[in-house]
Length: 168
Image (tube, rainbow, N blue to C red; front, side, top):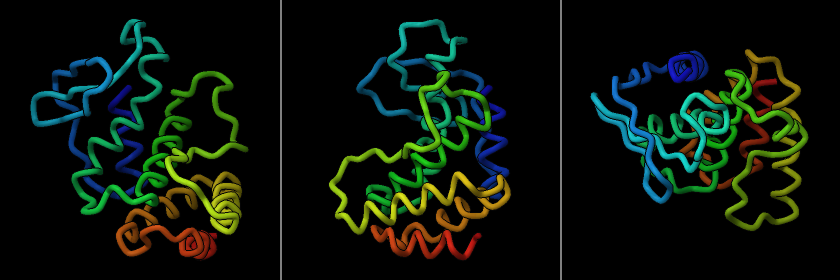
């Protein structure tokens, strides 16, 4: 399963993503995910067996965080968290790792760790509504363009909306 998530992430970003190490260690909460050439510490709080969807549905988010965080200098910005959430959700949907009707495409993957102004909320809704109406190819182009400009854009939903307009 993790190989298909990695392959999809490589396809979207046109990046050579590190392969999955041979040893995956499932760990309890409150520990950060970590990966090197031989081990991947996979954060999970599931009490279910490792082959169950309730354990694996977070896999795309964990992979995005583990692989990509090393490549972005300032990964603590709001926009990075938003990009990571949208990329994780996209991988989750494409690799069939969603929990039934847990996600509705009318909702937003935002972590909501911060307050949005009414203007920012409007831009966010425009971006996500547009994103879920794009073809898979255009979704890929949008995610890749956002990733490539993530450090320039910083915390500006208007710039993200303009980026979406470019991809449409």
